[in-house]
Length: 301
Image (cartoon, rainbow, N blue to C red; front, side):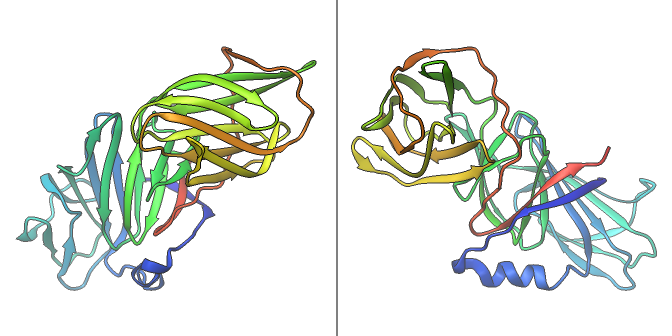
């Protein structure tokens, strides 16, 4: 587990700042690291790296059904340990580091293409997500992974949600010789995309409680943004500003019409609502999480 940590953003919620801050101020005297690996089928493997200990120490495992538990040294030789209960073991004194590994069942659920896990483990824990999970949600706050394999959760109390290989709808807006690409990422169906400089962008979505992410060129439409759903204001997140694009995220409860308005930069004269086969690459954004501090994890070359 050789990973280089890159700190991008840490934001704490007032409602849970006490346990979160406490977990970070007092380093874990027992564990060097905790890593959770999740594959595309929802299988979970947890690995704890335990420091050398002069006395027996209790290790609490993550909540869930623990299977295939192993306790070894770095040479993969078995180390003796004691069982306290289904999710707690006793690590015996050791003059070498100990690795505890197990599979965790019954924690991830899949519904309407969204994997969900309510995590509660008050130690800093890294989560390695499937490669197909480019965009995830932590306590309903969007986090763009990009080429990073996962996040680290400080605390750690979070609702983790992600979807694999989400559909992308590419829309083109033209102004004379300029073309502006709008990308919409969602499992919902997107129809009737159009632009009017008096009301902004509008499109119809067909789906219930689907995350909708809209990537907007800043030289086309800039903040302050207003997002309406069926002509009523809806909560949204403007969470990535990379110099050229802004990412807006919303989650309507049902099908309906989405309207997005802001400061129109150029004077538009024409709109083309036909989808075009364009793959648009967005640079590194800012990850925001409410209730937990998160950092991206980058593999060493």
